[in-house]
Image 1: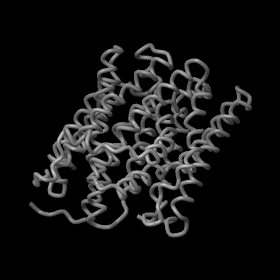
Image 2: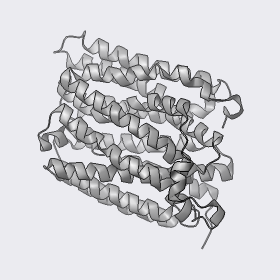
Image 3: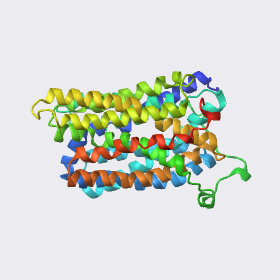
Image 4: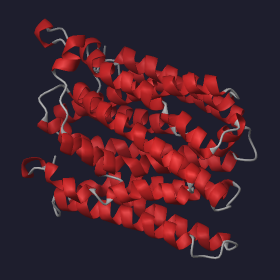
Length: 398
């Protein structure tokens, strides 16, 4: 079998990251329709969506070891097939029980693919000595914003069922084809018995890095919250209808893409510690200011409200864009475990924490308002500077 050039391998990796974001984020802008299908309140819907953490937790505890022992190809194929199938069920069912089962499966499948594809990215980075993790995250965000724009255009014109079914099948077939083409460079099964990871190693080698886990949680929560609630907040709380209600989310994601694709140019000029501190403050403050200002504007002035939200979400996305990928990169650099295991173990702690944060946000929204609920993840970003010492000088430019 012909060996891939590093340039071609990177192109395939970029394609998979793009399609991964394109697929899993495709239904986010149409959350109001999904919630309406189920006939649930904000609190009930948010709680159901949060149960995806159950599937994620199972994957994060096991898939890193499976990738190390059995290779990436099979894991990636099973994961992407499960994502597509569960996504179709999530957007067509009117049953809360079927939705619950599907969201758990989807959570597990997303985490499995996330571990496999990021492990492949770290493998490429180690072999070529090129820092590509943040860049690849930018392609993921590009897929997310592309699918958000398509969803915004299709709202009111194409049914949710047709939109997601066609998109899921198309993305699945394309991703399977790319995985097949990458086969020669995908991580192979471990052949050394002394380096094999067993189920017992899951618990014996489990390590909680409080600082790394804490800063990753604070850095990620706004991104998750915007994905979960931006469309519902803009449409239902702000009263902005039609496809334009997805615009703040689209701009948030575009800003994340911009930050992830170009932040490496700042590494030689600004220390990572200072860059992370600045990004977190810009993101958290701009988001909080935006939430405050829209409630000072006359409620009938929808154009001004939308304009304020667009500026607020844009700066919030730009500031937080590079935080999570940079933290994941640091975690891999300072750990002695395989990258797949590092990603899994970090994910376990943060998915448990994010599960409870999501529940708190959902029921805060139910008891008060989405505006007050969204203050929580924005405020958490302001805590990131207190954790910035995790970036040691020796790995600032990796």
